[in-house]
Structures are given as structure tokens and as C-alpha cells.
Image 1 (tube, rainbow, N blue to C red):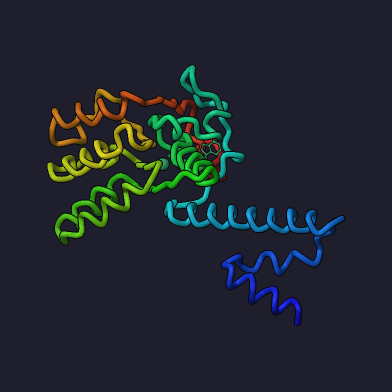
Image 2 (cartoon, rainbow, N blue to C red):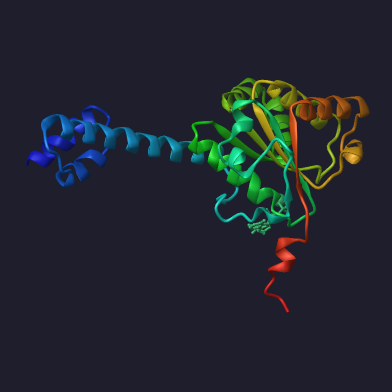
Length: 240
Ligand code: ADP
Ligand code: MG
């Protein structure tokens, strides 16, 4: 009976169901002590909810954690440590990360793992395979729903563009991608994963000038993470 009243009040205060589930187990020495503990629970459960919402909204292709990532074949820039990656220093400084290496060397895994860390730290993240973002931008332009799409991008603190340079883009694609990158410049971080060396970027874009402009914006506040070593997929293949 009392529990039902508590549940109802929690609903009215939009506190979710957590408090009514845990209050009976809280041990407290005074009213103040109880109130502090219960308010702490409310704050904690709200944080977890927000984090989960951010992870959902990021639309990661799959879920990969940083704790399962082996950094032994990754060369970080001098100013970056594993800890500073985990704490998302790059996002607070609005720096970009370029994850470069051969297929199977953990670029997607690391990009998503860093994105998850960012969600945990209250940054809004949005993940796309690059070709998909270009297609969506082109579609939204054709449907005249561009503004809505740009607004969605603008909300993000970190934009992850996976598989940059796998598929060449035509003129409209390059133009739209340029707009997306320009829009992020010094406002939000971009994480790019690619197996294409910088001097070959002009092979995927239609326009040399735009390629240079895109590269310029990404690299200006950019940190290069080199994924060296062999393909993890091949090394850990169960195929004989
Ligand atoms: P890439 O995007 O560079 O092609 P992926 O991130 O897709 O590579 O990695 C391929 C597979 O190998 C994934 O299942 C990934 O979790 C695993 N993997 C690759 N590198 C690592 C690593 N350094 N530590 C842990 N798992 C890894
Ligand atoms: Mg990948």
C-alpha cells in the first residue's frame, strides 16, 4: 500500500521506478542520512538513464568497450595517453581524431569505444558510416528536409565518421561532406577511421580543392592515431 503511494509520487516527480525499488534496503542513521542517500540514488539513476539514452541516440553499429581494446599496436601522438582518450580530453578541446590503419586493425572498435566513453561523460555522439552520411545528406537535400538533418548533426558534440575513403564520392557527395566537416570545425570533434593515406585522399573525392579544404579543417586540430600490426581478424581467425 505504502509502496504504491511511493511509486505514484515518484511517477509524479518523474523519478522513475528506481527509488521505489531500493528505498526499503537503504540503511540510515537519521532522516537527513536517509534523505541524502535516497537523493543520491535518484541522481545516480538519472545519470545512468541519460548515459543509456545518449548511447542509444548515437546509433552505433555495434557496441564495443574500451576495456576490451588492446592498445599494444596503436601509436598515439605525444600529447595523448590512453587515460586522456578515456576521459575524452579531445572532446573538451574540440580536437579531431583520425584513426588510420589497415583493415582489421581495430579502428571501428576503438572509434565506438571512445564514442561510448564520450556518452558516459555527457557528450552527445552521433555515428555514421561515411557513405551512409553522404547518402542521407543527399536524400535530405532532395526531400528538402536538409534543415532537420543539419539540426540533428548540430546537436552532437562528437561526430564519428567510420570507413572514410572506402567508396569514392561524386561531386554532390564531396560538397555535402565538406559542409558537414566545415560545420564541425572548432565547434565539435570529428572522429574519422580510414585506411587511406592523406596523399591519396584526392582519389576518393571529385574535387582537388575541396579535398584540400576538408583535409585542412580536419588536420588543423587533429590527432593521428596509427593502428599498426596485422589484421586482428586474420590473427584471431578460427579458420585453419
Ligand atoms: P577495422 O575497423 O580497422 O577494419 P575492426 O575494429 O572492425 O577493424 O576490428 C575487427 C575485429 O577485431 C573486431 O571484432 C574488433 O573487436 C577486433 N579487434 C581489432 N583490433 C583490436 C584490438 N586492438 N583489441 C581488441 N579487439 C580488436
Ligand atoms: Mg572498420
